[in-house]
Image (tube, rainbow, N blue to C red; front, side, top):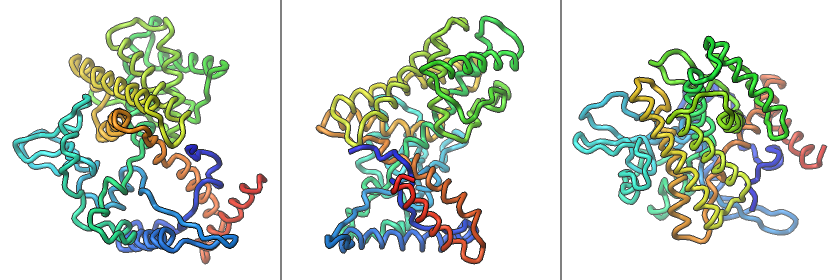
Length: 397
């Protein structure tokens, strides 16, 4: 089974088209929509639908999305926004719906920043209470009558693409660039050093192994280079650019254009490990063999260990780099999960299965259509345009 990463018009289904002004500030509308969709999935699983004289059934195996979406749709009390901004003994709810990472009872801390093979939070997955006080309307509408079926670990799925390519990966690339600038052999001002990096990227992008960025600027804003008191972060909105930056970064780190150090050596290891991890995951299908899951998991864990060391090295030198944010923890879960699954099972689900990379592409296409229809029947006309576009894509036009 492939990852289903073809044309989003032929591989994704539009559920609703509703202007955000109708639900953005009205939680009841949001959850009413979720409930209706959940009930529709219950009917698809239990009653099915007729096509060409046959009855077909569809089963909802999970709800996925970025952290804000899962927090809202899952009514999560433990979510990314609960990360503690200060140290102290005050109680913290935790940041993760799968475990108690980031939580504290005033005396015992369960740090989400622990990126080891046996983090303390791993032990809490078996006893962590439900992450919500109110049952999510979407899951309730699926009508699983047995209480044990209404569990977060069986329905809510983290999106590794958002967590890494849209989060941790951007932090990593930006911090690496910030560390490379003062290490360049031909030193100049910051803008001149960035131009040198851009020239290397342009030459690399024209090579047979090169890739092209959507976001082509190399300036201070691109990498969030303010001062040592602020952590660099990538400014690009196309998360696919994170992959391109990482591929270019590996090429640059293989050159002799900078003065090597313990930090740059660690950056080399980290970049190679994460590129190999995602290269394997994207080449594989929905199901990973023992070898694939073990290899990808090991590459991912080695990257996380290098990331932790880089954060430590730079902090020792009073520079804020390689930030420890909730998305680091959410990237840790699938990497460790692949290793543990490979040790127990013949097949492991590829974490990219729950990526919304193609779903967002469909949202973009439908959104553009919605701006080209009248306001009186905007929802109806938008869905109509999507049906036409989907039919044309299916027919190969």
